[in-house]
Image 1 (tube, helix red, strand yellow):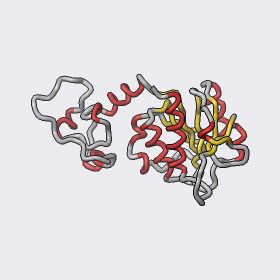
Image 2 (cartoon, rainbow, N blue to C red):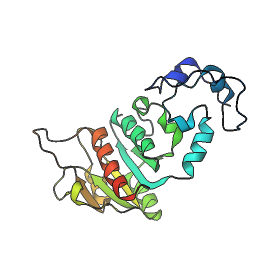
Image 3 (cartoon, rainbow, N blue to C red):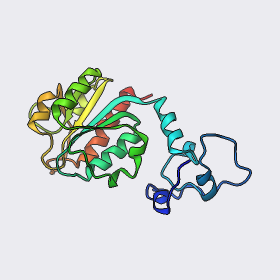
Image 4 (spheres, helix red, strand yellow):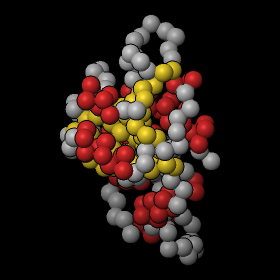
Length: 211
């Protein structure tokens, strides 16, 4: 059972959710009595209404996508939370934070509860683990030598890497990437917001590999 305060009940709500469940309550061990009693205002799909966080995670684990996401955390970037939220939407295998352990969780809207978020103190530590797991490290940035994302077929076992807003990928992280891809743009701005770029890249992967 999860005991939620009023703020936790509503902080992830991008939709009105549902109110208290009418009696008699269904007999289902996945359901949270507190949510049944007071309503479920979380931003979850209808399938997971009234479910405990633990039950939701267990169900998601049965159909995780092999895609992984990595983010450099040097500047306590708000975009990290947004990227984590998108990673949850695509049900990725895991998110890897490289650099500082603490990151700005506000933009994640508590979605980090539903997926594995790992910390790596260094680029070397990150690269060793990802490669041992059989993933191809692909950097997403509009750097020299990057291939247009729309002309690329990403491997199924991919880890997409994103830099901090502004500076982008560091040279050290670029050095461990097996490929660089860039999102084609048609306007005057030099680069996309990191959170938006991550969403586009994940969707591109999903078009080929998500089932």
